[in-house]
Image (tube, rainbow, N blue to C red; front, side, top):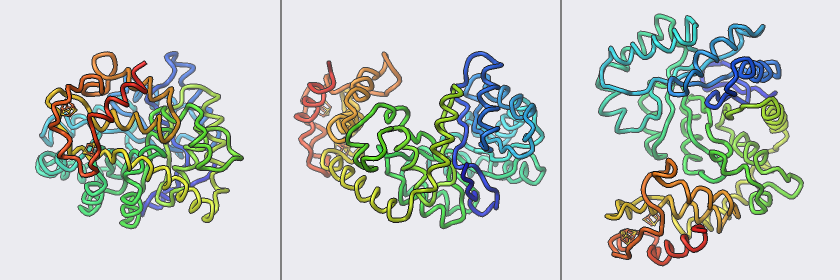
Amino acid sequence: MNYRTFGNTGIRLSALGFGAMRLPEDDDEAIRVMHRAFDLGVNYIDTAPGYGESEVRVGKAVASHPNRDGIHISTKNPLQDDTAKGWRERLERSLERLGVPKIHFYQSVHGLNWKAYEENFSVSGAVQEALKAKEEGLIGHICFSFHDSAPNLMRLADTGIFEGCTVQYNLLDRSLEDAISYVQEQGMGVVVMGPVGGGRLVAPSENVRQVMGAEEPNTPRIAMRFVLAHPGVTTAISGMSTLEMVEENVQTASDASVLSPEEWRSVLESAGKLKNMSDLYCTGCGYCMPCPHDVNIPENFRMMNMHRVWGQTDSARWRYGRFEPAGRIKGKPASECVACGECEPKCPQHIPIIEQLKATHEALGE
Ligand code: SF4
Ligand code: SF4
């Protein structure tokens, strides 16, 4: 296992982190899977109150492992109200569920964005509560998990409050690439969630394989190596539910050290070419939204790019069938466009949106 230093904290975390969001249903099996990861050197485990019984099971697994003192727990505070008291109560509940006196890396807001920071976290007294909890030794490091744009990630780093963040970054979504370097320069540690694109990079893809060179045929491994090759990334967390997944991921995270600076540059160059191809179609900026008929234009084009640029056709088709209410993707599929034309003048890429939505449905609607 490789270890990297988490920002300015001096703490060495394993390059692979354990994501405890989809543990096996059976308690004993869940603990076996977590213990196997700890045995193989994983020393960072990420959970959340919203992951069912995960906090309780993580607490049990850590407490019953011989390396319990060397394992770093991360959990999150969902911003359910705008009171400091509520924030503190949620922290105390997590400590109780985990059965620990201290949470090492506390994502003091789950899914933070700039608006929530400005209108809630920074003015509700929660920041002071977080600093107080750190002083009391209830939390080790004040971090956040993040769902927003690159400029807003940098703005959050500039506040100087946070020591680390958990962000989305993978071969299919590189929008935070430069911002990750920026926050690293500010002394923050960076944990990446979704290194295999929320499962979208699990399917084999010839295009993705070419990005990393012909010698590597395994797409998820390529995806993990890509994330770990970013010099700003401390740890990539992978949701693991079987012993096989643990062993394969550990092997990948251990191999990642062999990616030389030349290889990393060549990966960036190849990935850049693919990214440029997808930019031709849609950058995901969202300026065309909202659609009066609730078509989720950027998401439809993202799926189209998965098919057309990345060759991930099966995954793209599967996702296309997952708009609400059948799945959890917000808005409507391309087939619901009535060609009113309201969106097209707003697109800075001058994409013929109506025509491209039609093509999207033709390609993915089957
Ligand atoms: S043209 Fe289609 S996608 Fe664009 S605003 Fe109208 S219905 Fe929505
Ligand atoms: S405005 Fe254009 S580039 Fe931006 S999300 Fe909409 S279609 Fe894509």
